Length: 245
Image (cartoon, rainbow, N blue to C red; front, side, top):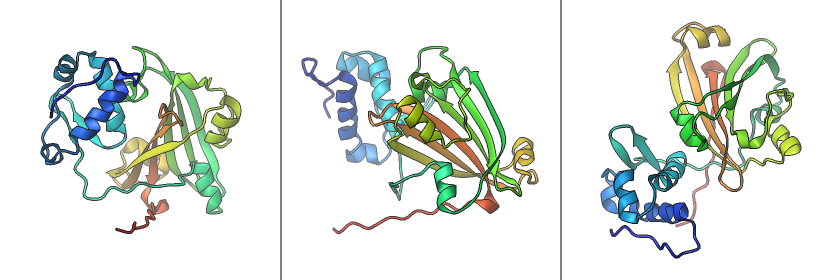
């Protein structure tokens, strides 16, 4: 496939690269595991900056279409099942829908320097601090989820907000920021000493890790959220409808 873009087009360069990548990853060789050209080579071939190429790749990585391994390369995600969920809810909305009264056990806020994963996700300037909100929540009998949320500084959160309110209510009503798209990853792990103490379980007991990436209507990143759930208190249900062929 020939790599080229239209430098005279009104379509932004990163958007053109994204379209180019989407065509490339539909080719059989890339679907079968071939690595994409590296960022430097693509940038030279297309006559654009490496950062522009990286911006397009980052978007597809966070959509779950591509996977990138440092020192190895970028390739198409090999998935036998790819389910898109609709009508996703915030944690408060989920619990309210289930009729579960939630107790907030701990809440801390601080400003931190992002690691590489957060830096790439939020597309930040170098060393730009971000707000981190940590919450321990659960039933009145015991906590069952520990959340760590990071927010893009563009939003304007200060850390002094009343986070006992539903998060997306705060974003919409106070900052006119609307969460439109969520991508989630679910995995399992054994509780370390820190999580075991937080969730009141024994070390090495199973914990479900739920990672959520949240975007606004313009596909700009809003929130990077990590949730660690007691495995005896969380069931993740996927409902999908088969389309007619």
